[in-house]
Length: 139
Picture 1 (tube, rainbow, N blue to C red):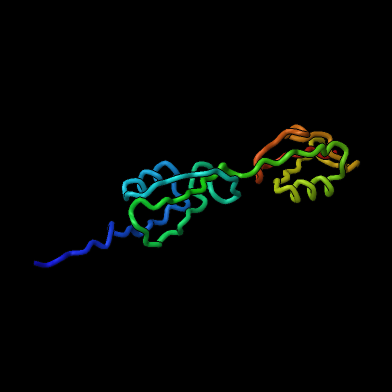
Picture 2 (cartoon, one colour):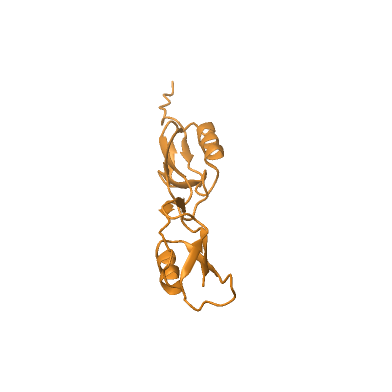
């Protein structure tokens, strides 16, 4: 009589789901017999609703039933818009860039003899996503 000893459940190679939609990723991992958990975090590079990272990492071989933690993007972080009224064009552009916003300058009268911001497209004190464009009007 031969005795056969089990090595346990067959191992599963984790697919790379980083950058993929979270719902589809969780479904695929669950179908492989893995236990999926998720948390959320802001990401400047991964679109909202997609996987930012996973642990254990992709290509790791794990037993069925292993927990896999996904971090799902909430999109870019929010930035509080500063009050740019009466700032010089160069100061306003520098501040917007420092905050991760994209300045777009227009000159409503065609010239800017005073070199001052008179209007901005995003209200001061409001929160907008990092990387958003803020139009400033300069005269």
